Image (tube, rainbow, N blue to C red; front, top):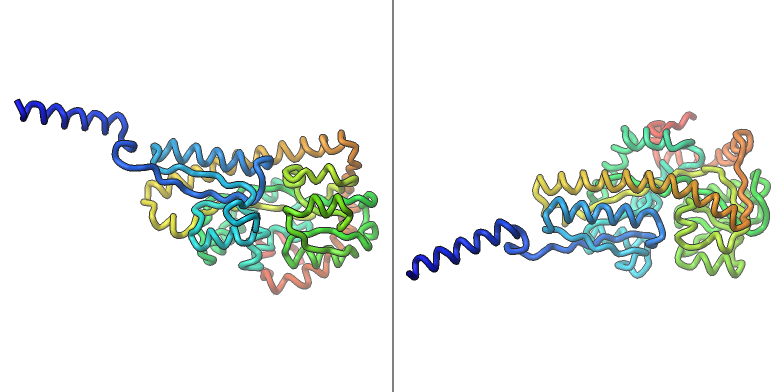
Amino acid sequence: MKKSFSRRICLLAMCLLFIFPFSAAAKAKHLKFGIAVSENSTWYPGAKKFAALIKERTKGKYVVDLYTSDQLAAGNIIKGLEMLRMGASDIDMRSTIIYTTVDPRFTVPLMPWLIPSYEEADKALSGSGGKILFDMVRENGIEPLAFGESGFRQVTNNRHAITSPENLKGLKIRVPTIKMFISLFKSLGADPTSINFGELFAALQQGTVDGQENPPDVIASARLQEVQKFMTLWNASYDPIIMSASKKLWAKLDADEKTIFLTSAKEAMAFQKELARKKNAQLIQEFKARKMEVVSLTPDQIKAFRKAAKPVYDQYESIIGLELLKTFGYQK
């Protein structure tokens, strides 16, 4: 009788394990995913899709918790990357701009008017250029998963329309904490300054700076269009983002799990890029509807800006390396 009862208990336990294979065996492992921008950006639905795919494909073994606006790093975008390198966060989504703080060669896709279109961007990042960037990420103690994008960075200001380098003379323009952008705007005659992104809305509202430059999606994520009157569509810099994993997490995953993380990241970032391109186009129309004056530059006007930006290439050719620049389409 006792043996029969014991067999029934064992049979029941096996059935429960079959029906709930993971929940009966172990507790879900929560992963911290740091995102540099807010939920209003296309970065967030991309990250959300990744989290859903990981939960589904690992049968709940891994649960990805999302932390927007660099909550894990108290809003410090550079510290956010350092936390990933240290393994204090597990997954991360961040612009290559921030990666330049650990290796200046990451400046390459951001170089002024180097990548002229989305087609050229896709070609460069899916080919040898993207492979080199991923190798550089690994060299810096992080495991790259997939490319996403913020898109092309456009310039806004409160003084007047910008259609030539002369229009930038004397304008106080907020730029990211990257030396190349400071060099670029100085070569164009502007007065560039670095301000924490979280403080930018107030700085524009109060007139501390006249303008800034960012992709439309990032502009809208911080509501900067509400305190800017003019926008110039000049596609000066293409801004890729990289979804990465900490080496600490990567070492714990088995081969099948690594495949799941890689394929899920690629799917999520393909979704994010498509969403970003649609949203950036849509946002420009919305900015116009808000009475922002939006100017699109002609090829001849862009040529004048490229000529004025030549000193930036003279400076960065040795920093980035001529061969890497050529990989992204640079012609000396």
